Figure 1: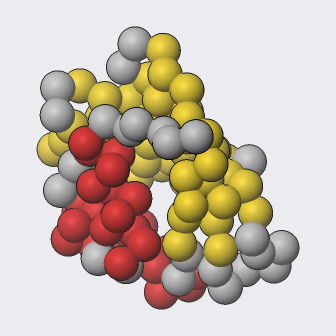
Figure 2 (figure 1 turned 90 degrees about the horizontal axis):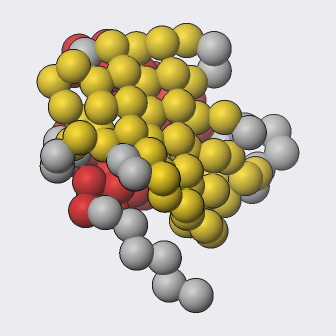
Length: 109
């Protein structure tokens, strides 16, 4: 089954798998929020810092396994491989979109 994601998500995951921080930031709106590992990061500078820290620490790649949509809300199940105990693991990426941008991302099990 081929999963058709909207372009901002395609761009985010492609850049993530290349470990391209600038490319990962492009799809995010200027007032976006990311929640991961119990912390909230808001705005481009905070999101960049989070991306750089997690890229250094985990060096993950994500294979999209499934996706569901409800309006502008997307829930993507990804098989995540990297430098962490239990790799690979399935994580859920919960995105909110507005126009052509990601306004919110929550990552969890």
